Image (cartoon, rainbow, N blue to C red):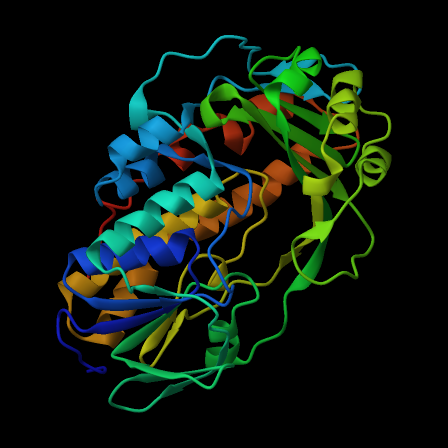
Length: 395
């Protein structure tokens, strides 16, 4: 038998991202005493747009967030995949009008900060003190009776169990397994937000479009009631030396990286507000054979970092949070619950990881291939419909 704890004990979560907050909300609703430790000094408007899959949406709906999500997001239209230079439609369709809204039965586009804000508010409604900022983890120890966390400001926290939800450079993962640092994936991403009024002359391919090919991909779609265009470009690169994921970038940097792309792409980039543009290197690391050790486990990118070519990174973290809480509810034995959590998630995570790599090969091919696109993972709804509220858990 593994370490045991009360069915509604205390839990320390490292990282106040989408996965950590989802787990926090699910556990709070089960009666757990939860503290979420975030190293940032304040919770601010971080990130840009993301795709919320139907399954992840249903997971959040099970925690009481459905109505808020529907207000804050937009239904995803049939996205057009276009040749990077000519603008020829290779897959999907151009949609200039908003599609019929089918609620959480379809993917939705939302600003990460808006979704994050909904989760923070829901967590704090249950416990106003649940999220603690300015806490950079230095050490995590299993005392036998619980988990002990030591932070850079000298504070020490105790809990029955700890969850590492602190991203691809996870301090919890390092404390548990002391494995190798993430490796540069040979990709650099650019991101910015543009007011729709500024972007309108370059939205000829409709509400959502992905320009693909020549070792690059440029994705843009509407968020925040259709008034803001979310822009992300990913280009293959030989090296990346900057630290962090939010290095300031310039319009010239972005234009140079996407030289030769369609005039609509270059026009959008030229209208981008430099003061809000960032770039970052994409990093990856091999999957862990085991996600848990003693009284601690990992979720989201801390356990299984993923590249963004299918837009399912946020969904996986949310799914993890829902499934982990369900596993903990089914067994007071931590080892048993942690094992059940990983067993319930491994096949799903591995399928998304391998199909994401395949999608990257297709959309960053030197010359896009229509036949490959029609068979690509993005055209397979089953990948996006996984429901964490009903996934089997065996304890």
